[in-house]
Length: 269
View 1 (cartoon, rainbow, N blue to C red):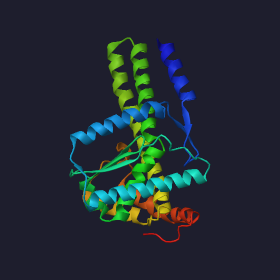
View 2: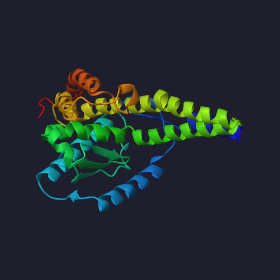
View 3: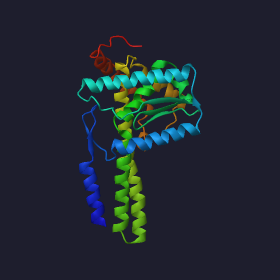
View 4: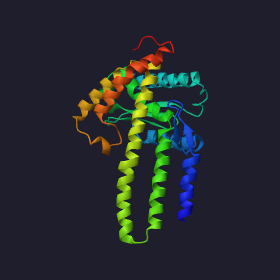
């Protein structure tokens, strides 16, 4: 059994790689779109039936408008860089849900939700574009599938350890150490790297869509003010700290504008 688990882990790690066109990096991903997208679409539809979707009004229309501009910009970048057809299985959808939660998300395959609670932070269409670009970037980079893949390998490691260790006390010690070590040492850094990657990709896409990327650092200043500066240490968080994000986004904004200029974008909203 131990050998079988080891062989499985090695096989998945070696064979399940996919290149991210936005970074050029090979990423761990053994959940193909043909498997993942239908599940995500079904979950999204179920979510919409169970929540208060805002179907009409200026705010709902703005979410759709920004989403369409951002996804079109992503398609434009991909086509220009030799990845035409990369988004052929995506089915973009943009919904506003009445909920005070300060959040937005995008499922694999392009299913997006904004909560009304984040709109006081975004404030403007440009602010919505910051969040939309970030969430679309998660979908473009297959971050959902990567997290599932990493989680599966983490579980394989735990099962292998429990099979190998016969003594119950030692096994309990292993489980505690493995759970903490694999989470803090691997899973949380993995998640933070995804957030940073989505920030950078999102900034580039929003600029190509014609939105001023300098808004991103300003939005995160508002987000920091909203939180009152209260946040766990970055090492224990799934996300980079607000200060880290603000500094990164401010530094990357000029680069995003330079990229957008290549596509004929010379002014930014």
